[in-house]
Image (cartoon, rainbow, N blue to C red; front, side, top):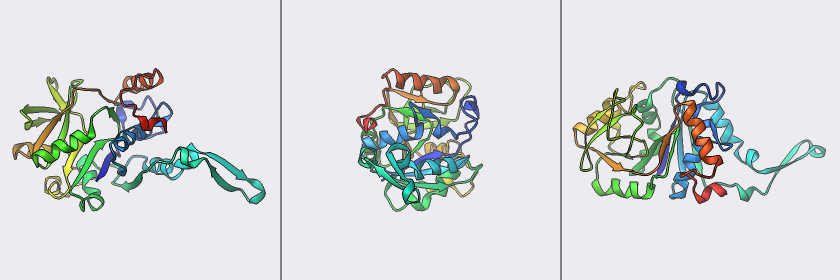
Length: 265
C-alpha cells in the first residue's frame, strides 16, 4: 500500500519562515517536515511513498537524490579523482521507496492526486496526506477502520483551529463537508486519509485545477461514501510562522508527540 503525500503547494502563509524552500522541506529539528511525516508512516509499516511535486519540486528531488550523502559519513579520495565512499551507511538507511512525481506547478490537490493515478491504482487502497502537518494518529487503526466500512474515502477528523474544512458527522458517516468556514465547531479534516484505489477516480475528474476538498469530497459525502476516523490526540498543521516555531520548540524540548522510535535511527 502506497502513501501519497501532497508536496506541491506554495505555502504563501509561511513565507516568513523561508523564501527559498517549498513548505514540505522546512526543517523541524534539522530534518524536513515531510521526513517526519514519512517516519510516522514507516513506524506503521508503510514504506512506499509517492510525493506529488509542484512548487520548487526540484529541491525535494535533490534532497532524496542526496539523502545518504547528507546523512552518512563520507570519504572523498582526492588521490583517486574525487571518488566518494559512504561510511556507516546502515545507520541511516531507510526502508523507503520514494516516487517523486511532477504534478504541475499550479495544480490543485485533486489534480495532483489524479496525476499519480498510474502509481497507485493497482493496489486496493492508498493512503493520502498533506506534506505540512504532523500527528500521533494510529495509522494501523485508521486503515482497519477504513476496511471495516467499505466506503470510498476515510478522513481523519480532528479538533480544529477554526480555519479548516468542517465535517458534519453522524456516527461515523460524513453528512456534509464545508471547506474553510468562517467559524467552526466540532471536527475538521486533518488529512491522514485512506482512499479506495479503484473507485476514487470518477470523483476527481481530469481537471488539474480540481480541489480535492471541494466538489469531490462534497460529492462523496452526499453519496454516503465518506467516513471519518475520529482522532482525539495530537495534530498540528504548519501553516504559519508561529506554528513552524511551535513545532521546532516541541522537538527541541523533547515534547514532540509525533516522535516515533524510528526517529532515533
